[in-house]
Length: 117
Length: 116
Image (cartoon, rainbow over all chains, first blue to last red; front, side, top):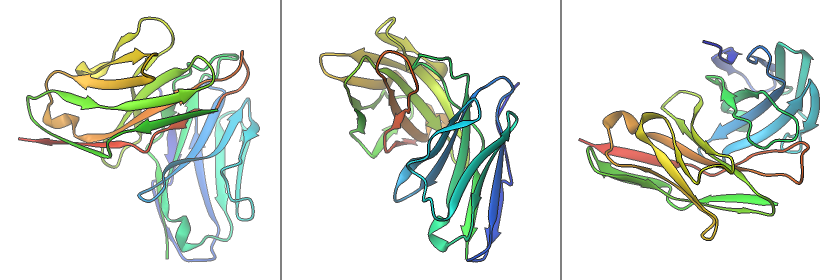
């Protein structure tokens, strides 16, 4: 049963510290999404990759957030320095990303719950 | 441009009664529409999707949704609620001009509460 994995599941850190969240997409999927979920804002898209290339990161605060795909099996989301307002659940999702279609299903990981003190 | 509006932030039903979660969308192109469910402390899972085939779409766990272009709606229904249906439900629209990349838009979510 293929699934998206995310590590760590929970992270508590202090303001100013660097945080790195990792995602392993389903093997063979070539799109990856990073989302942030909070009670106030709901689900926000932070970044979107296709074939490891970033296609959209307009939702991501550029001064402190960065997203990369070092290879097809790993996506990372980094926050440096972290702030209390970054506390949220961060989800990664992957999809087959068939070119020219809007019908792609996203498969979500279990999320990383981040608390910044 | 595309957008999606979930008309109710909370819906409360009794077990065994019908469920209706409402979703309206806006899209400049022929859209694909999805419903995802999120159980507490879990990731989102696809319930069903509409991709321009049959307008009545059946999903998992007895849910179904009907695409109504004239009303720009994609409401989610279930004849009889079960306690395990208590969760957050997200309506999603995805559309793009002929081919190319796309970015789906998520609604704010509807929390379904099921009373015994």
